Image (cartoon, rainbow over all chains, first blue to last red; front, side, top):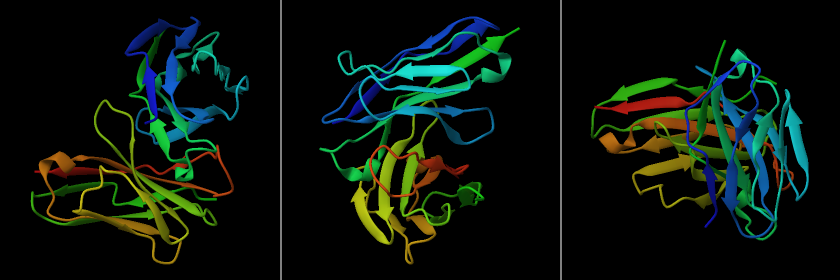
Length: 116
Length: 115
């Protein structure tokens, strides 16, 4: 079945450092890929998404590119802030051949802590 | 647009008791999903509805679990004869239901603790 693998955390960075959180996936068909973020004490919210190969999703300075050849969707940000401290989840939903009404399959999450 | 709401936010119960959770999706969203999240893990899919029809159930959803969406609006998730292993955060999400790759909007969750 479908699966998502994320780099394990926690990741601790200094403010203004470069961030990469690796995400790879296994899926049949043509999945859509997502990054969701969970800030402390808040619910899951969409950070960015990409629905086809080579698409780049971006939001709030974060970017991720859908790489079908490497089955990856790595999250990057050039300069992190303390306010980016959160748990980040990579996820996929099935494409044309998997049906299932777009249920999401999540990775285990990566906790990011940004320090001054 | 008031977002997805869930009630209650927290529930403590004793093993063997039944519990029911409610989810109110974003109005006019046709699809509604239930997920379960345990500590340190990502959410796991339980079931989903397209309007009032329950179209898919995960193998995680044992026969002690039942979900309904009677009029295609709010949904309830009931757990009968709760077990300590049912302790988790139960998340509800909704989406418009217009195709693939849709964004799902999550509620704040109901945290269940079974003693």
